[in-house]
Image 1: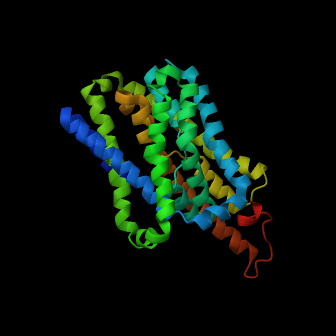
Image 2: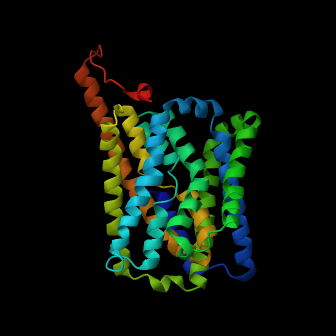
Image 3: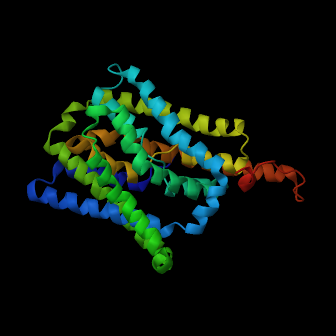
Length: 336
C-alpha cells in the first residue's frame, strides 16, 4: 500500500508548525492567507465542474441519495456509537475529533481517481463528490451543532455564515465564471493542482501552529494515538463493506457500486480543515488529527481496492468472451 508523498508533506508541515509556530502578527497574516487560499480552492472547484455534467448527474438521483446517506447519516451514526470507547480507547477531545470526522463531506478528486482506476461510473463519481461537498457546507455545521453541542468549539449562525462565505460563495462564483475561465482552468489543471495542495498545507500549518502555541499537543499520548488508529481502521472497514454490499442489495450495477464505494466511504480533508478552523478555534489542530489520519488511511486502502476492482473487471470481460454475450443488468449509467 503506497504512502502518498503529499502525506509526507502534511507531516512535514506539522513538524514545521511544532518547531516554528506562527505567533502574534505572523499568525494573523498566516490565518488570513489560508482563508483566502481555501476560498480560491473552492472557486477552482466551481470553475472545473461542468454545469452540464452536474445537471446530467441529477438523473442518477438514487446513486447520489445513497452516497449522501452514507456520508451524512451512516457515518455520523457510527461516530455516535464510538462514544462508548471513551475513555478506554479515546480521550474526550479525540472522540470529538473523530465525531467531527464523520460529519464532513466526501472527497472529489480521489473519489474520481479511484473510480476511474477501478473502471466505475466516473461521471457519477464527479457529481456525487461535488454534491456531497455542496451539501456539506451547510449540513456539516448543522450536524456539528446538533451532535457536538457546546463542546464542539463555538458553532453559531456566524460560524455557518463564515463557512458559507468561505466555501459556497467562491464555488458559485467559479460556476458563474466557468464560461469564460473554464478552458484556462482545464488547460492548466496540473499547475493549479499545486494551488489545491498548497492551500491545504497552509491551513494545516495555521491550525497546528495555534495548537502548539496553546499547548494542546500535551493532551495526546502515543497510547491514545494508537487507540485512535485502531478505531479508524474499523470505521473505514465497516464503511467500505457497507457501501459495496449495501449498494448491491439496493440493485446497483458494478460500475455504480464502485462509484458509491469510493464516494461514500471517504472524507474530505480540503473541506474539513477550514470548517474545523471555524468551529473549533484554537482546538482545531486536535480536532483535525483524526481526519488527517483517516485521510491517509483511506488513500492507501482505496488504492489497493481500486486496482483489485480493475483486475476483477478484466476477468469478467474475459469470461464474457469477445462478443460480450452476457451483460450485467443495471450496470453503469442505467442503474441511476
